Amino acid sequence: MGAAADVSTVRTSEAPKLRLRDRLKELWAHREILLNLTRKEVKVKYTSSLLGSAWSMLNPILYLAVFTLVFKIVLPNKTPHFAIYLLSGLLAWNLFSGSLSLATRSVVENANLVKKVYFPREILPLASIGASLVDFALQALVLAIFMGVELYGFVGVNVALLPLALLALIVFTSALSLWVGALNVRYRDTQHLLNLALLAWFWFTPIVYPSGFLMYHAGRNSILGVRLSTLYLILNPMADIIMGFQRALYANVNCPPVEAADHLCTLYNASVGEQALILAGVVVASVVLLYVFMRYFFKQAGDFAEEL
Image 1 (tube, helix red, strand yellow):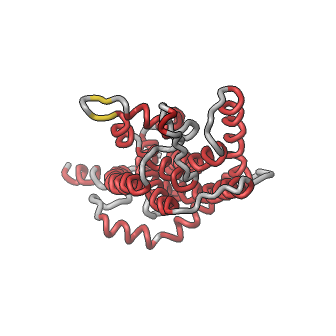
Image 2: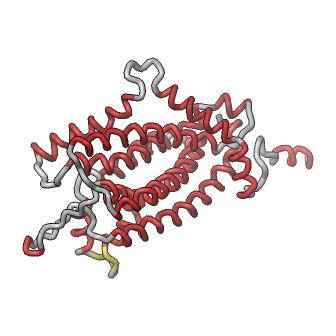
Image 3: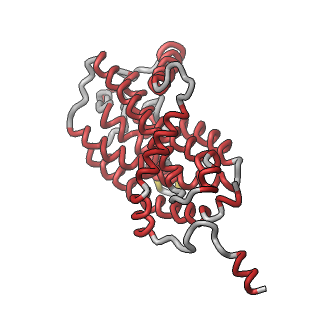
């Protein structure tokens, strides 16, 4: 009886407790597997495709065409250089949503590999982020082309926000990718719920509409003495990250004269230093979240082989 009880508690492939330093060393030792799986993700994505990776570049162009039609013709807005504004936000959002979508299915779709070969399972969702970074680079090229065509000048102290915003994006995305990747092994509805959540999240984030408009009106209302704009920045880290990308790449806050009364700026009317502090806060919170979800993923990983 005692032997049987012991057997039932043995984990299939992982140590009983996560030791972070040792795990990070193990992940580094298996970095070649991460690179190979990233290459595989990219190749599988465009297998038998005539246009191949060009589809990644067409994605933001299609978004731009649709939203330009809606917000310049059907429901006109006054955002200057709308294409640059939209693409600067989409660049970050597509990396985030694409990574999560791939990461959710990453363990399930590699079931044969999980059952036959030992390697740190965290590599699977992280490879999804690697594949999405390839798309990110291609879509950044699209944005650069539009900037070149419009002779759009954006270089200044604001550019310093870009590496910080990208760091916050990658750490936050990594944390959620580990969570949904493990969750989907046990609850296969996760991938479907994620699609709905991303759709709602997209519209709750100032990508299509001006972030200055949102923050101005949210700042005029409060709950229990706390401004809604402050709550919004705390509860929606992707908004902080998107606004960081917008300030770095779109750059111009575009505030009207004081006598215009509405004070509806295109971008969130905060200094570069203030936005840097917000992004630094997102990085710190995301590191904590990454540790929490890494522990969760590690706890579940030992049973992946039985559940797949």
